[in-house]
Image (cartoon, rainbow over all chains, first blue to last red):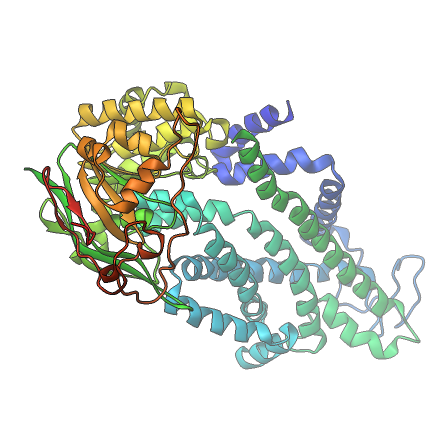
Length: 310
Length: 316
């Protein structure tokens, strides 16, 4: 019953998002009442809430984030739900506006690293040989650096700005896509159906696109959300160190760096931006871990099914 | 005599961390147009490797020597693009494990569309589906299977679909690598009858790789018996089964249960390791008729008797 149900959904969805994606999504919907499914939904809910908060910042924020609106370090209460920081700016308004930068940077950075890491992983894993060894070596040496340290170096070289920060973070996360995809590809490459496709005269490009890619696609959403969670921290770290953005732009990491020395006098100005970094990271981790639980058993289940049929 | 495929002194060596493994050594094999050649031998004797070597489907650590002439064209010197064109169009291959030979995330229809468009990108998907339906009817698969995913089909159905994929371009040669090993006896007979009728219909030669002597006796015109990477004996099916010359062939034929005595003979010992170089006849340790010369001199394969029978043994 449940299977037939999902197949119907897969067909309808398949028209819009391509069949493999449709099947993955149908599987996800079917699993959405399990513990992992609930965790994913909670994560998605929080991330969406923060995205809406960022988009609607002009309407939601009670004050201008860059204007002195009260005496510095006014504690939370009254009109200032989260208090006022050492410059007299409303902490809540800065948090609402400050969601924009991390979200934009994460979106751009994870997309860039996906767009570079995925094709390189596919090629390296499928072609193998010397190309593979060289790419693995390069990627492993990037991976060996602590992420934040590497991002600091790159950001210091290419300078400030939202796009530059995104590029710096993207470079840090290319190897995670590369490694996961490449290893998965070198496994799928051994599958009998890949050999059968080659034996039927399929060109290499079609084999990769139609036979290998769909069968490794289930790894992508998981790495995407785990990387996104990690890059929130990297972004906050960069801006905290003053490497990321031009001054004046509200940003959670930047706000912590502005206020942490005054923690004892006005803890709220440091605590609340930190809390939001924590919430966003946790929500993205929920999505990633939950998806991992849901999507990876898909392989095991399919194998089981094949065995039972045989 | 109308030669379709001719392997000449074909050798395949795998470079491994333990040294070179000679999986196929100096094999001569001829397949005539429209005929079936059975390639028999025990597991690991190199018969599947030989089949893959023809289509150049071997892994990177394989070194191939000798030549494979297909319609007079040396396959070894073709570019990879030219070879890709041959695969599926002129020479096709079906495998032992139909359960895992279809992409689990692709509908049957798309397998056909992809295969046809791989060779002829100008064909529109609708035309490809039409062509696929004709071939599907030939392998007796109902048309509604086209919209299904592989996991919704049985092993026999999947093997028929694999065969249909191979037939799309009416190849002159089909390499069937143990096509029925993973299927039950009933299905085995069905699939083989199907193959035979299709062979006649499509005027196709078949290289039937198997360890099942019964299949070969029934379907093959000629038989090549492989042992330790070499052809031990080769000849027309009926005379070879009536009067096997090579001691290994004799042992192999006795290894089928005898219903009168209910006894099962087995060739003593195990096949030799193919790692490194060897001297003498590879069958010596297991041979009941060994002579002094067998230990030191390798018996080259040569014509013995009628029907172009060839045997690699010092007895003849």
